[in-house]
Image (cartoon, rainbow, N blue to C red; front, side, top):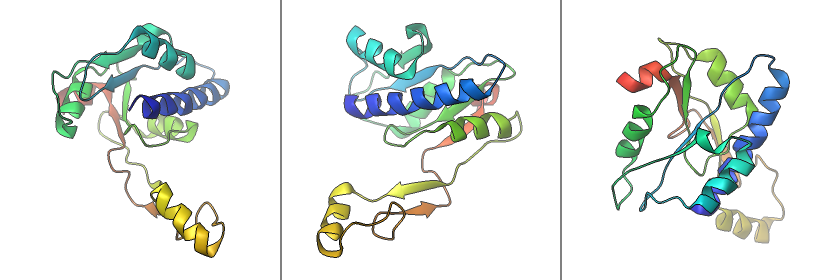
Amino acid sequence: QEDKLLRLAQAYGEAIQIFRAKVSKPVVFRLLVTRYPTDNASDELRQQVATRTTLNEENIVFVKTNATKFNRAQARNLIHAHADEGDQSVLAMVDVDMSVGSRFLFTSLMEVNADRMYFPIVFSNYRPSTVLLVEKFLGPQSKYSEHRGMWRGFGYGMYAISGRRARTF
């Protein structure tokens, strides 16, 4: 899970840099993380995440779960409880193995308000070992081929909601 978290942190950091380069007003980003089966986050892991996201360590919060088994509903409730309640605050929920880009950040901030949530349409890659097997027989596939992945009308586990609404949702 740490590798997945670090990959997400890297993508998030790149998206934040692109976002900040295009937006003139300062925007504060926080990364809220739940970890199963353990709550422990070493100082080294926190530093690695901070470096990859370009965030200060105080804006990276490992939320305590007190659970040994993953529970999506519990994780979401815990993250929602730690959302910032500011008027301009937006909470974006992203699964650790989803890819995040600056477009998702822009759209989340533009579309979300107290009365409206955002559910992205995402491209889903199939399991890499399956893709490799297909390519073994059919040759290299384009990034968007029927053997590599598909567009889904929903991002399972991905959405954006106002911070204030998240606390009461």
